[in-house]
Length: 208
Length: 255
Image (cartoon, rainbow over all chains, first blue to last red):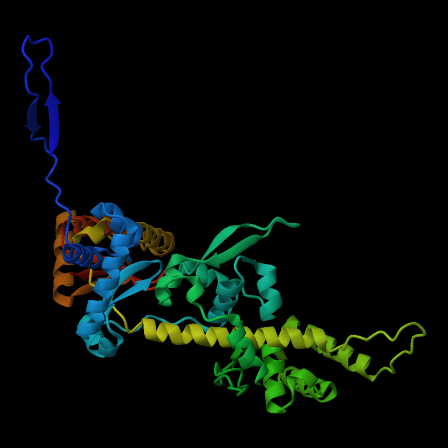
C-alpha cells in the first residue's frame, strides 16, 4: 500500500491532512508463512532443470538467505520423514529432487534407459588426479600416472567433466585443468570438499 | 588369419590384447591404463614384497622377464617400459655399490629406491581414488531427476545437436562425393514426398538413424533434400534429435 499525505497549504483554515491511498499495481505483499515458503521452494526445486541454489531461490521469492535455508531444511526433513520415492538433496552447489536409489530398477525399466557408458580405467585415474590436484598441467599428470594421458584427457574434455582453468605461469605456460560442474553432478557431489580426503587413500596404499 | 592371442596379464582387470597390426607386426594393446608403474605394482603384489623395502634385485629381474617375454613374442614395447627398465637397473646397481665412507659428518645417503617408492605410492593412491569415483558413479546412476518439461527445450543442448547434424552431413557429403555413381536421370524425389516418407518411417519404427538414412540417398541432390527434410521435421514435429555419444550416430526419435 502506498500512502500519500497531502497537506493543503495556503488555506486560511487549518485542515487535517488528507490521507489518500493509491492503489498502484504493486501486489499486496503480506509476509508469507514459513509453510508457504516451504511449498514454493518445493515447487521451484521441482521445476528447475538443474540443481537450484539458495541464492536463486532467495531472489525469486524475495526473501533473505536465512529464511530460504530454514525452509529448505524443513523441506528436507519432510522428505526424509515421508520415506517416499523421492529425495531432496544438495548436489553441485544447489538443491535437487530426484528418485531414491532403492527404486532405480523400476525407474530404469520405465524410462527404458541403460546405464550410460562408464569411463575407462585410464580416464577414471586421470580424472582422480585432476580432481585432487587441480589445477594441474598435463606434464604433472604424466608424472603421477606414469603414462601418457592425452586420449583420456580428451575424453574427459568431451564429456565436459574437466575444463581448462588458465595457464600456469612457468616456462612454456602450459594449460591447467580442473573439474567442472558436470563432474559434481555425475559423481553426486555437493562440492569438491565432499570428496573423501586423499589421506584415506594413502592409508589404503600403505596397507598394501 | 588366425585369431589374435590373448595373453593374460592381469593388469587390474582390463585384459590387454595382442592384435595384429600388419602382416608381420603384432602389437600389445595395453591401452593407456597399463604403464610401467602398473606393472611394478602388480609384480610387487605378486612377489608379496614390502613396498617400503622393495627387493630391488628380484623385482628388477621379474620386470625384465616380462619385457623379454613381450619382445620374444614380437610385441613392440612402449618406450615408457624401457625407461623404467633402465631406471630399475640403475637403482639395483646403486644398491650394490659399497657405501662410500666420508670423512665429514656421516651423511645419510638417500635410499636409491626412494624416488621410485614415492612414485609408486602416489600412483596407488590415485588408483584407489579412481575406484572411489567409479563406485560413486554406480550410485549416482541409480538416481533420477524429473523428466524434461517444455522450458528445457530452450537450452543450448538441443541447439548444439543441430550443429552435430551439420557435421554429420558434412562428413557424409565429403564421403558421398566420391561414391556418387552415374545414374540415369530420373525424377528427383520432391521435398514434400521426402518428408512424408521420413515421417512414415519414424512413426512406424519409433526412430530413424540419420546416418543410415542419408547413406541411402542416391545423388547429391537427393541427399540435400533429405537434410532439409530433417530440419523441417525437427522444426514442426514432435521428434527429438539424439546423439548417443560424442560423434556417434544421430537418431531422430518420436517423442
